[in-house]
Image (cartoon, rainbow, N blue to C red; front, top):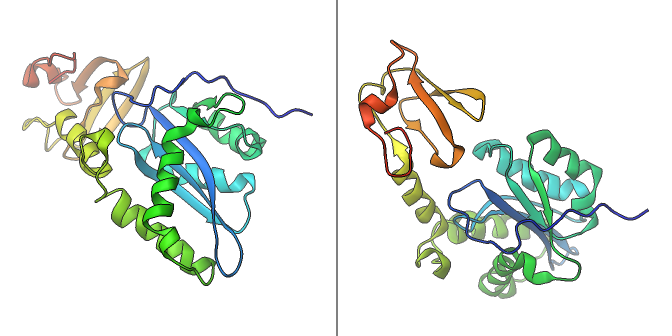
Length: 243
């Protein structure tokens, strides 16, 4: 029975306008003295940031599901996220597809035999090999796991300059976007809840900092106390966000 194939709606559009709009995922392998170790990553295309990863001595569907779950838990991408991968059996599996369906993500797959459709993830793997893996001889899986995780967390995401990001590291580039889109109103800083409505759904934002993502398509935004529109405090920005 042939594996299911999703359309390539991303079509190499590797530069989304904001985080959490399009992710890509892929699998590679790392040689160790105890045998191959397989690594699956999930990359947010906006800042080229590795937001999820998983490693195992084999590559079942659970490997890619675990990597995506790692990305979902802290970032909570909204339904409609484009999730790109190749046509591997892990990505076509029921286990992985069920996770996409659960969160309302759009499955996107490379065209047949076209590795360039996943070039951004492939480039991350090449950097990992050149800058770390090929300079090491891992005695076992634990040693490789620790070193690869250190490369991702301490170097690639936080320090490595990326030409596609204006020679900034991924975390720095993403923080620039967050600062530009972080709207703080003195009158709301002490309010525990800000209610927002977008695409027919109502959400509650808790905390002293109110994070409004202009890509979500705001229809209204009001504070609970007194029903005052946030726009009265901020005015309206050029991109239409209540400010």
